[in-house]
Length: 92
Image (cartoon, rainbow, N blue to C red; front, side, top):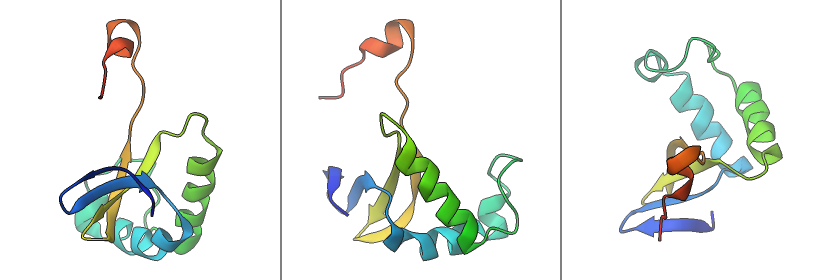
């Protein structure tokens, strides 16, 4: 993954096909799934992960990113620009 943000051992960058097996494994864990939205597939399969990647890749601007810890995929984060005063927050 080419990071767009890196701090010590944690990186954020674009989700890619190398992340899918780990995504499916983590998302299929009942201890993880219990904390996710009701619409989240359960059980979560590799096909679900592939569909999620297609959605992430189709977004413009990109707002779904992979999180890596020590170069291992550990999850996702969604960053969305807010409205009104929240659209003016600077991240630099």
